[in-house]
Image (cartoon, rainbow over all chains, first blue to last red; front, side):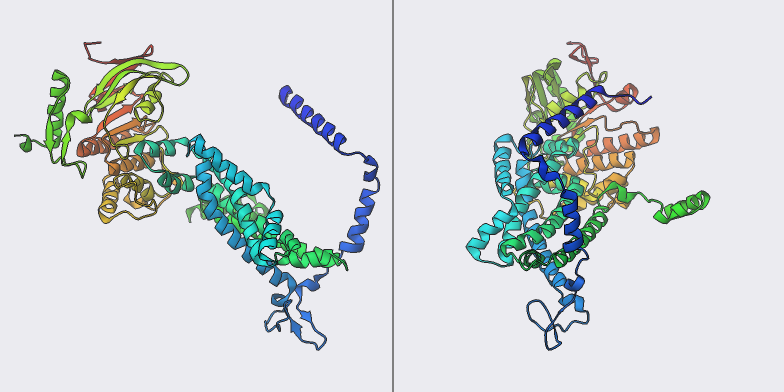
Length: 310
Length: 263
C-alpha cells in the first residue's frame, strides 16, 4: 500500500485554499471569464493563424529589387539573410550576447560578496541589497530610463539588459555558490587561500555547472527580452514585433516573428545542454543511443557494450 | 654540532628537550623545509591547547591541555560522533572553541594543511589544478589569483604528482577518479603546500589494504621530508597504532593520551 503523508496532503490543501481566497479577493467580476475560450479561438483563427512567413523574405520594392529592412540592396545568395526576422534576430542576439557577458563579469564578484559562505554578513547584506536594487526594476523600465537619457537604438537596450543581468544573475549565482560543498571551502580556508583564490579556484569550478547553466539561461532570457525591449525603441526583433502589434495590426507577422524567437530559444537550450555536458557528471557516463529502443534487447545490449569499449 | 645533524634528528632531539624541560629554546639554522626564514625557533613550532573545550551548542570534549610537538604523528581515536572532527576543525581554526585557547605561531597562509573526511578536493577541476592550490599558498597573497605560478612551484607540483604516481592523470577531472587516486591528489596538494602541521580526518577511509599501505608509506615519506606534524583521525585502531607515535583517545568527553602517566 502506498504510504500517505497526511501532513503533506494537509499542507497542500491549505496552500490551495489560501490561493483561492487571494484570487477571489482580487477578482471582482467572474463574469468576464464567460466566453473567454471563444474570444481566444476567434483571435487565433482570424488574427494569428496562419503565421505570415513573409517576414523570412527580403522586401521587394516596386522596381522588383530586393532590399534589407534598412533599405540596403540585398546582395546575399539567400533571401533569408535580408529578411526582417534574420536581421532583427541577429541584432537581438548581439545585444543579448554583449549584455549577458558584461553582466556576468560584474555579477560574479558581487555574488561572491553576497554568498554567506564566502563573505561575512556585514558585507553579504549590502551586496544583496545592491543586487536586489538592480533587479527590482524590470529591464523594460531600465530601457525606458536609458532611452530617455541616450535616445532610441540598441545602446539603451544593451545597458538595460546588462544592469538587469547583474541583478538577476547575481542572485542566482550567490545561491549556487552557497550550495557548494563545504569540504573544499574549509580546506581552502584552513590553507589560508584568499577570497579571490577561493572564488576562482574553488567556488567557480565547483559551481561551474550551475554558473554555466545560469549564464546560458540569462542569454536565452535576454534574447526573449529583446522582443520586449523593442517596445521602447531598443532595436532588434522586438522593434518589428512592436510595429506589427500596433496599427495597422499585422498579428500574423508578429506571430511568425514570435515563432522565430521560440526556435532560437530552443536552439540556445540545446547548445546549453551540450556545453554543460563538459562540466556535469552525466557527461562522463556513456549512455545507450536513443535509437537503440527500436532494436531487440540483445542487440541493444551488445551495441551499448561496444560503445563503452570505445 | 647541530649542523652535523639532519632536520629529523634535530626535531627528535628538540622533542626530547621540550618534553623534559617544558619550553625549549633550540635554534636551527637554515631549516630545509620552508623557504624564506633563515632562523626558526623549533619551540615556536609547537601547538599548545590550554583548557580547550570544543563543540557546537553543546561541549563535546572538555578541558584539553596538550602540546603537539614538531614532528609528532598523533592519531585521535574514539567512537563516532564523539567530537574528533570538531576538535580537528577547532585546531584548524574553522570553528571557535567554546572555551580555552590554542597557541601557535603558524603563518595564516599555508601553515596548516587540512584534509577533511571528504578530502576537500575541487571535483570539477583537474588533478593538476587541485595540487596547484597547495602551491599557491607558498607565494604572497598579493599575487592576483589568475597569475601563473613561477617555474619552481610548477616543478614542485610535477614532482609531487610523480611521487604519488598520479602524473598520468594530471589533466583528468577529480570527479572521475577512484577513491585511492583522490586520496593521492589530496596528499599531493598538502605536500606541495609544505604546511607545518597536517590535519587529516579519516583520509584513508575504507580503502583496501594495498592502497592503505602505499598511501601511508607515501604520506610518511612526505611528512618526514617536509618535517611536518601529522594529526590524524582514524577509525581503525591497528592502523592508527602502526602510523602514529602518540595516541589520543576521546572517552566520556575527556581527551586521554595513551601511555601518559601524568593524566
